[in-house]
Amino acid sequence: MRAIVSQVNTSLINKVFAFSLNVVFNAGMEPDAFIAMDRELIDRLGGPAKVAELLGFEKKGGAQRVHNWKERGIPPAVKLAHPDVFLNQPMPAKQPGP
Image 1: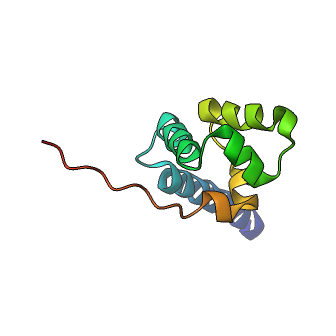
Image 2 (image 1 turned 180 degrees about the vertical axis):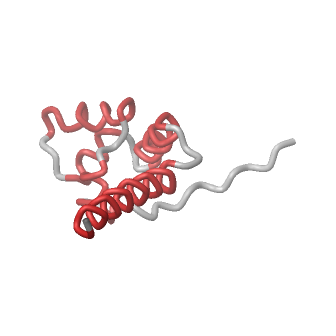
């Protein structure tokens, strides 16, 4: 009986923990917001051709690949593989309105 209770408790803890992580990491931002941020980042870095060059992609197809990210978002694996390019990029200061 103790083994069954232990398995049930473990299963419940895993489900609650997974749900909590999902809530924490997905709270407050819609997928479109992440894509918009990625699009802006690609533009600030000089556009698809420049980003493709920074990543060492082949000339043929590299810029198109990066351009697709402006619609789909930059794959997380690419961001992690190139933290010097994608992570901790300063955002431009917003201009005060009239």
